Length: 434
RNA sequence: GCGAAUGUAGCUCAGUUGGUUAGAGCGCUGGUUUGUGGUACCAGAUGUCGUGAGUUCGAAUCUCAUCAUUCGCCCCA
Image (tube, rainbow, N blue to C red):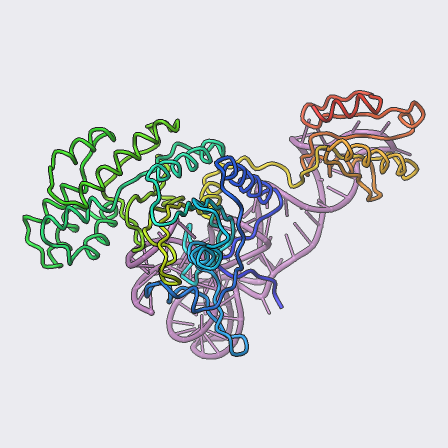
């Protein structure tokens, strides 16, 4: 029997896991800072629930199995479980309902770079009844912006668009029936040359003249203000188009009021998102210098979250950080500050077993002062104890030996600088806590 | 689901037209005399060369199969 881990499942060493947990904690705290409440739903659900609103692609990738007579499935994302949750508890929830959820989701697809079968999604969503204020679409941007800033990530941009613009535009060209196909193609524009894009449009049976217009429309360049102006200049007489433009304008201006640096958001009309339940604003986040990472955070607005479960209307807007991908790609580029494999601030070592009692007592004292500390208990040469302390990269080493015991003090060694000093208990605690 | 590539020590890899006991660096273990690590020096361990079969006097090297991994496409975080 050889030990191995399934492909597409991430497993980390302690020094990496510590960084991962830190990122999770920053995300969690930021989400709560914006007033989102925590939510946890089961990893397993009835298959019929998870497959309720999905297209063919989900069915192909979802892990599904039978236990007894029950058809079960592992959650594919956190949005469908949220839809079920809202349908189930809407009478007990207070709207607008803001929730966050950080959890693993499962997709049985072929693992590739940045693609996992088990990965963390860190979702936020705001759900309301009947109508949801458009300003929330800007708030979602502010949350992501704050998280990325706090995580000290490389330069990034949140690209946004409004689906109503393109669908209104296509409607005005009288090719509304091709909307889904065109959207799928638009999503690929960054990956394929323009000629190939035009050819694929031609394959849809659209006339050359329209195709040029579509290409021109989705590749409008400029800063946010310039793009908004260009969109207004199109002067398209279509209700959906006008609504989309107005929404986009509001989101941009409110984002500024929320304190987002305009450098970090960019209107991009080629962002459409594959998932067909989005109806308005859509988001995707990329790093300026690492486009190959793919989108590390995306989402959008949907008009009707729980429609498959009930008649009431619940519009929402949400976004999700793909934490596993984010972590994996940053690690691959050496962009993570990976430290030692221990959360300990101090390690206590004794010169000989005779001082074990003092060591254990001191550890208790440090922990009562909220200082993560540990006693090294393996009996070996003192040199080995030093090597251990060095290897786990613990910031402080506390030594107890004959002299210290006699004088009733401790030797505190800063492992980074090598400096050491003799301190009494209260001085020691102060020095380590600093 | 479709297409392509790659499998040699824990990791990254070398291994010359098939030729004897398969190598390097990093890491790991021990040591350089007993209260001090990170540097240096010395020594050491670890491989059924992915697996199975075939060709050959002889295979890490050639052929086939198989498994695994990786990279594209599709779709997505």
